Length: 370
Image (cartoon, helix red, strand yellow):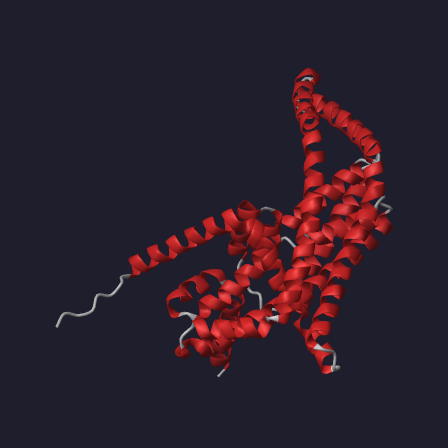
């Protein structure tokens, strides 16, 4: 009898890469439908402890689900209202900020002429070209802003409806998943569902707490320095800080530019950079590990790649959804033998390697003493 044909590892890898490509195309084409559903799934998992608590207090299931969704919707609307009210004064002051920035640009031109010997005429050509591009695109940006606002309102409404329905039919969906997979895979499926739920709950709640702490620290530092719009800039930088690595520099650059537009000196700018960098250092090395926890251990390379891919496929929502998605995929890959190499690629084991090296070094020292 002939031996059954086995699939070689290069063939398995090609199948997996082809599957990833097809999933990417599916997400890119259908992101208008998928993004609200994905946000609602995350919100549903986040609201499960609330609904369970309300049901223990003898609330009917539908009422408990409705109250949980309304609480979440109220929180989201409150945050949006707060940011909008803070942004209103900032938008009204944009002409003044632009005037101060023009003065700083003139000072920079003089410095370039003196130090780098580039004539003012050459600099003017470069600046005029950039200004012309901004003027031509400003009307387009305003139109896009109104479009994005309407899309955001629609997404929030859809997420609220989807979340309520997912909470109502969560047991039905769970039975469906167990019915799809074979009996020998049910234990692994149960493990994947449990770990994914724990990761999302821990990550999302920890992220909200961390964002609140960072926003408070940013606002206090900017208020002490005397920065105008300190609360708005502090909260805005904390929201951008959700995006790993990239958000820090974007928030810092925006804060510096706005501060340059409201100040004539440079000392405040230096203190802003120092203050926000210190907060970020404490956040990255202490707050993130304590509040968000060590469950979401994804290496920096895959984090950046995931953020870029998510932003390319579905825009800004993909940037924010990248990290929880990678964390869930890591859990799924770790439970499937053929996909475990991908789990190794996503994970960050530098701490384990460091701990092993330290233990080995200590063992050598103790053996020498003996």
